[in-house]
Length: 333
Image 1 (cartoon, rainbow, N blue to C red):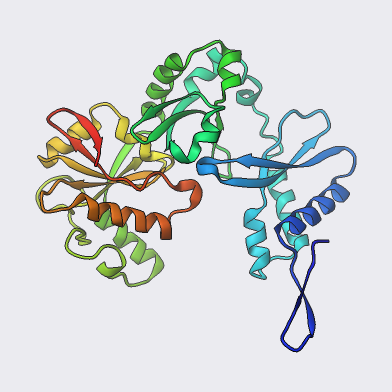
Image 2: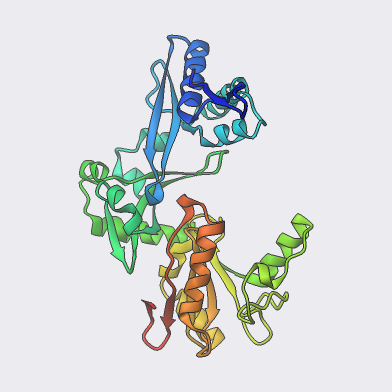
C-alpha cells in the first residue's frame, strides 16, 4: 500500500502516510474498482513546461476516444496536509471527470481538419533551455532565450482555459510547415488574447484590499525602483513607474511583447525605452528606462522572485530585456 514505517526516538514505531507513488497506486486501485470493466482507467505521465513531470489519471468510457487528464499532485498535497483522505481524493477525481466527461466537442473531433482548426491556433512563449527535450517533439521557433510554441485554443472548459499543444505529428498530418503555422497562429493570438496594461500600483492595492494584509516596499523591492502608490491608470506624468503587460484573460500573456507596434506605442506614450522583466509565462513587468537603474539589480530581483514566488511550470526567464524604441527591437541585457 506504500505505507512507510518510521521510528521515533526510543524505538516506538509509527505509521506515516504513503509516499507519492503509493498514494497514486491506491487512488488508481480504488478508481478501477469503482469504475469497473466498462471504463479504461490508466495513469498518464506528462512532460509539461520547463521539464515539469506530472502524473494524472485518464478515465475512458467504452467507445470514447478522449478523456481529460486529471492530475494528482494537488490531491496529494492536500492529503499530506491532512485536509483530504484517499477516499476523498478518489471522489474528487470522479467529480472532475463527471464535470468534463462530455468534453468531446466538435473542436476535438475535428482536430485532424486543419481548415477547421486553423482559426483556433495560438502562440505561447516558453523558456528555450528548460524545454529542450519537449521542443524536440514540437514545432517552434527561437526568439532570444525563448521558444514560441503553438497550441489549439479550446476556450474555457469550466476548469480553466483549455489548450492542446501542437506537436510535430500534427503538422505532418495537416501537411503544413512551421512558417504557415506561425503566420496563422500569431494573427489569431492577437485577436483572441487582446493585450492589456495594468498599473502595478493598482494591482498591489487590489491584492492588499482582497487579502486584508499590509504590504511594505521591503516585501517587493528595496530602494526607490518601485513606487507602489496608486498612481494613474493611464500612461503619462504621475503614473506608477511600473506596469504589468498581459492579456485580457491573464493567461500566457508574456507573448504580448511580440505584438506588432505594442511596445512601440507604449514607449512613445512614456517617451522612453523600456526595461522588460519576465514575471512569468503569463505577464511581463514594464519599467520606463532610467540610466541610474542597473540591469544587474533588476536581474537579481527577477531571479529572486522566480525562486521564491513563481511555480516551476510558470517560470519564463531570469534575464532582463530592454526595448529600444529608436530601432523597435528587444535585446537581452
